[in-house]
Amino acid sequence: MAKQAEPKKKETTVEFLASLAVVLVTGLFIITFIVQAFEIPSSSMENTLLIGDHVFVNRILFSPRTRWIGPLLPYRDVRDGDIVVFLSPAEPGLYVVKRVMGVPGDRIHLRDGKVYRNGQLLNESYTVHDGSENPYRDDFPAVAPSEANNVTPEWHLALGQHIQGEDLVVPPNSYFAMGDNRDVSYDSRYWGFIPRENVIGRPLFIYWSFETPANQYMKRDIGDRVGFIVHVVVHFFDMTRWRRMFRIVR
Image (cartoon, rainbow, N blue to C red):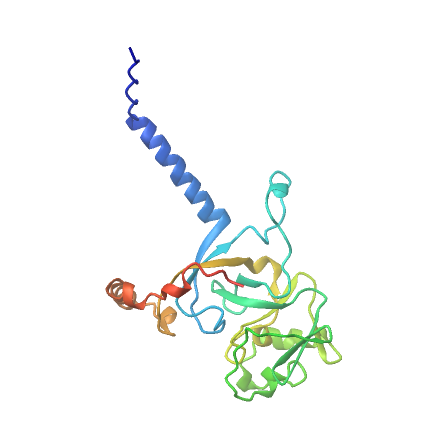
């Protein structure tokens, strides 16, 4: 006579709560220390990243190595061409995303809007140009800035000591970065270098993208924010950019 299978033991309330706690703690750890959600607020990285793209940022890739877990994690230094999220040197508390064009020791200059690094012209198929002319922006750093260029006082004072010949030389523990939408990007040409300690991480992929007005991030009023949330709920399906979902950022 076949032995009847024993009935499956039901999970107790304590066991359920313990399992739920493990999931919550693990999720909180990942969100706090490993990845961070970030929304693209401006057009400075178009067409690589659009306004309304929501990305997950790898927070540990560029972190200082630790002895106890360092060998287990893929730490590395920031490289030329990396897209990074960082705290703005010009506006404290503001998160910004740009592409690193120069790491410590690199020699950078622009001619007619084209970037030369260590004497070599870069092939930048990802850039966007609007066709306008701006000698300071396009022939950096050969052309001195004027008041119309919106250069920060700090950058204006520090610029001279890092210029050698026609190049700007990136100092230690610093990075030179620009937006892919090159002619509208407010970047290192205007506010200076990114300090190493300001770097948050590298965007991994777009997990959601929604058509968003260019000035939405500037609206701080509670009414505007609630209104936009309602707008998202109503137009979630028809204004979500489904083709950008899960796109790798590079």
